Length: 344
Length: 239
Image (cartoon, rainbow over all chains, first blue to last red; front, side):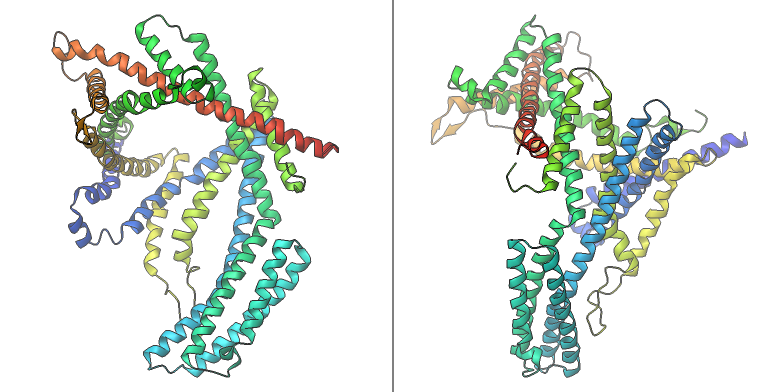
């Protein structure tokens, strides 16, 4: 009796949270837009939606854990098919490892670029502050900027020298020369040297710094594309994943055609219509169809745009109404018997 | 394959061709070679999915700003964008999402049902919104004029097309309408007229699907014949 009561309470809690999960998006949808804005929902909609995605994304570990548990056990106990499980786990761990390393590498590169961009951003901020104080630049922040810029320029120069030893192709050489000339140009700048401290000199320095940051970003991107970890990622993604995906997709094409050849027989008017439509669409898509009849592509186009489009829209509307009913039932916990009571 | 192709590119094409051949070997019969690459494909896909979620969503939108890693300061110490403590509120959905893991406990499995229910509720509400935002414009655009004038003159072709479109839509919708008793009613009598129109639609679908997949098959064959053979030639020393 006690167990049943607790089961009912649990079922009620689950139903309540199911309803709670949908109420925000439903209210956001049904309320008029001015009211949504007034309630502050529109301003924070992205953050709130992200919160909902976070709940779902916490489940990613569940899938990984199940995969590793099932296939790991098969490998450890050498059960039938352990080689296949090993290839699955190998693909999984290598992908996770390579993507993690590539991610760390790209974060490091973008961090370095951001540091260089900071020269221009800081100079721009000093300029804005000075404009607010009738054009007088604060000398102490000017010194901080010069020191920071000097430190970063030295770092980029060192990077270029190190890079020259690693990557030696023509495209990189052009980028390196461009960057080196920009560094030299900035080092001769009046603001950088401290010979001029007025706003116009600072604006020019800001502009040159931003151009230097753009050049540095291009070089870093070019370097990242040549990095071993990026090549390894390309090898996994373009060399294996995409190729396997395309092959699977193409394989199904062969099976669809073979199954239709074996099972499809033109015995009624309806099956004849179906076959005619299929043949017209297929012939209309290839140049051979035009050889048979000049207007074949036009007929195909008409078939797809008029009768097919109308019938497909009717199917979608029908399926959409069914989906709507299912969604309402799901949201109001009418659909799922497993949630309605623990007794079942 | 170009003459200046790098070792990485050659390796990539070689392994890609091998994978393609392994998948196509299924056409002969199911074999270990196919099974190995099939599992490898699933493994890579299973690794890519979570990594993309973490790298492209969780880290930049949630974890990075929450931990303050996205906070940048100017060289003089003033912040570019100050830390937003409100991001810590994301710990609530994170903690709530962790209830999924109670699914492994026999005693507390019902806690996992709470978060599953919550996600289902969210999906349900989103589906309601999705239906109205998708279906209503389609319904509105289905009301086509049955008599069309082009450049001031009656266009028989455009009028026929619109009439056929509206008729097909209504007849197919009517074919799927089972809510009211069909027997003997006018609705029941005209319902079979929707079937041949549906068959035309299915035929067109079939044709489009087969052609899309065959186009990919042709691309795969071209890849094997041109790129892969060249890569093998380079590896064995004929390239």
